[in-house]
Image (cartoon, rainbow, N blue to C red; front, side):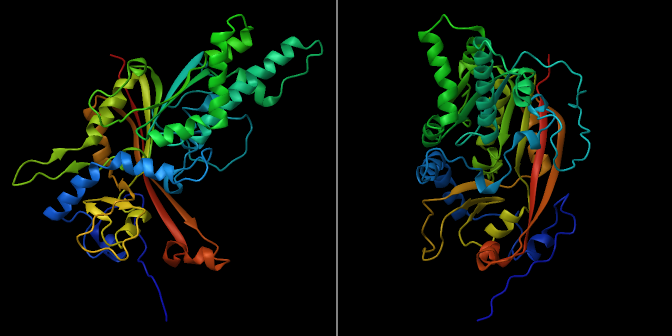
Amino acid sequence: GVRGRFRKPLLNAASPRGDERWLAAGGGSSPDASSSDDDDDSLTRFLGTVVDRWDGYYKAMSSPTTTTSRSGTPSNVLQIFPNEFRYWQLPGKKGKRRRPNTDSTSHSSETIAPTELTVVDLGCGLGNDTLLDLVEKQRLHHDEKEQRRGSPLSSSPSSASQESSKSPLLHVHFVDASTEAIQKLRSDPRYQRATASNEESVEEPKQSTAAAVAAAAAITAQVCNLVSAKMAPAHLEQSADIALLLFTLSAIGPYQLRGRNGKRPQSSGMVNAVQNVASMVKPGGVVLFRDYARYDDDQLQLNSVVGAQLCDNFYVRGFDSSGQKESDFPTDGTGCFFFDLEEVRQLFTSAGLEVLQLEYVTRIYKKSGKNGRDCSKNGGAVERRRIWVHGKFRKPNN
């Protein structure tokens, strides 16, 4: 038979508001419509299984060294936050033209690089691919420097090595609530080689300067649940120059839990999470944030999945609702919340952070449709309109 799917284009994707756009996308009701008490019960049960669901997600992955970005989301921090990671940008690299960086964190290219920099990747999953590559490059640079030092015929360093020599010593701490994710991250060859140098430094204290510097880079991975009260480990308290929150808060739960029997709405785990993040950032340090925004194409698609919406703008993704009874509760799948700017602003300012930049980022991905497999994805739609919230927040110096 004939099958089709039709959607009215978003009128202003840069500021995605308006229930008429939601209805045009096929939604039977506004995404902000009130939920029933049954939905509250389902949400409560879901929130009690969040970590187990992510453990199941990573356990199902075939290869322990495969890195992934949730739902194909962008994860290259050199592209998403070029200013904060400017010390590791390759000189003269050609790429897509970007609009000028006008936020208040912009610096001159002549700024002297710090001697070391600490990055904490919160909700890291299997580890940010770019950070692992930077750790690998840092180790290779020091190995190459050591070889030149011991060789009578010293060759000229490569351009990548020269660039690494100008970069700060990079400390990276990976943090996630999933034990499975951290175990697989620790099995990544790049992580193992970086941490092996730390172990060797303990066994062989008499080593050259270059090797000692490489070993001095702190690379760790640990299991911590951001939503727990006062979660931050002692060694991470006020340690981070940069804290990364890439598509992490949306997986925790809804922005706000509805109050029952006329009571005021309750704060969700997001509040604890952001407060824990703020406690890890040193004064003057920044939190770099990107997550799903309201009326993103993922939300429009999840609206058509029976049983996927647990409450306002919060959904469970990755389960098959076919054949389920109305009373069935999805036991698989992970959660996803879709933010607006004011919700994000409130979360971070309440934790004592200053807003440096907060905006919607919109991308349109078109498919060629050259084969049937391409056309069958996304319900046959030829393009996807992705909308994310992009933010930078700073911890005051006083």
